[in-house]
Amino acid sequence: DWTTEAFIEETVADLKDLIQDKKVLLAMSGGVDSSVCAALLHRAVGSQLTCVFVDHGCMRKDEPRQIEEVFSGQFGMNLVSVNAEDRFLEKLKGITDPEIKRKIIGEEFIRVFEEEARKLGELDYFVQGTIYPDIIESGWDGGKSVKAHHNVGGLPERIDFKGILEPVKYLFKDEVRKVGEAMGIPPVITRRQPFPGPGLAVRCLGELTREKLQILREADAIFRAAMDEKGYGDQASQFFAVLTNVQSVGVTDDERTYGYVIALRAVLTTDFMTAGVVDLPISFLTEVAAKIAVQVQGVNRVVYDITSKPPATIEWE
Ligand code: XMP
Image 1 (spheres, helix red, strand yellow):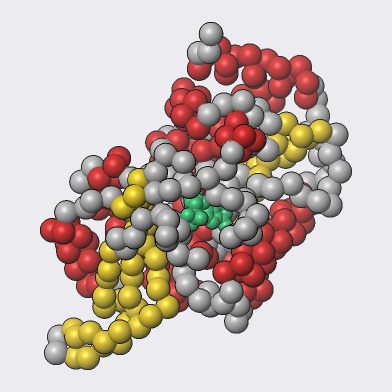
Image 2: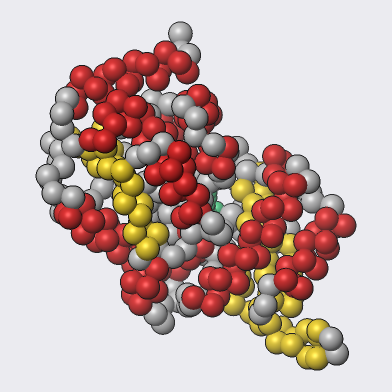
């Protein structure tokens, strides 16, 4: 008989028994799974746990700060937060192919992570936020045919560990959320929508630049805040902005402008293999569009993506 409280108690006790006085390393992505693993491990072994969060510069607005506030601030965990934006952007200069972008981000992520881990000295266990659906199925095909797999938190190749810990391996997503809530992780994380490992990189079409990422981050934050404010967020599995690489002519204060087109996407899905478009009211969409086009420098046009999956995918790249 599975109850959240019993699961937490047993898991923490088992981890304590196993780990003893050894050191544990966790790759924090800011997602639900790695966050709940961190909370379990922290309760079991406290300061023997170190979490490393690598910011690849493609996180959404305020996310790196939120991660620090929750895990370092609220929980008091050892959290190493690395701002590696410059390093990633340097590697991605001139790259436009989505699969190569993914590959570079995935590889660079592991390199930065390994460098940080090495600085920490002797480490015995590595934590992975694997959940049950990761083992049995994945809505995203993991690169077998369409997209190359990159999930932040993959296993560093160049560090030797005594063992891998996967404390939420047999849980489903909603169970992981419940455990997180019971352990005091705030909704900003437990209710977080699925976010791809390469982050905004696959929503910022074409070459990545600091400027384009900044525009996308602002537009995306406006859309997500409006969705949550009106309660539409609960009707969507994923909703976000995309910076198309298209520029179009507009007009502001009688001046001709030439700015980016932002696409908004909101989909509802159970398995991520197929997805439907969320039927958002046009009045709501025009309000959001106006807000984005007025408030975000460099954007003068906003469109809503009304394509299901298939034939489209959820992400644009
Ligand atoms: P698509 O775009 O293939 O997305 O319909 C299906 C689901 O997979 C997520 N996705 C990714 N997740 N790394 C990830 O960790 C990736 O490179 C990646 N690409 C897509 C997408 O957000 C959706 O939930």
